[in-house]
Length: 79
Picture (cartoon, rainbow, N blue to C red):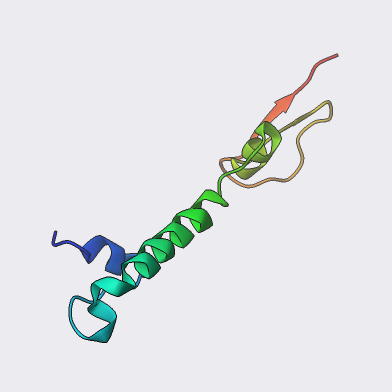
């Protein structure tokens, strides 16, 4: 795989290597753009245990499970 193919396949813009936008003076702009992409992905990560369980489809309670979709996990807490 050539350099940049993975980024292009993921929909990220590539840094041009020619023309006005390909000049070294725009390097900081491209570095910051890359950091913006990292920040967007970082914001998708749950920040608490309960948020991670919810994102994974894991729930718990004392009642019998009702609803849900295939693959969800429910832990019933017994008294």
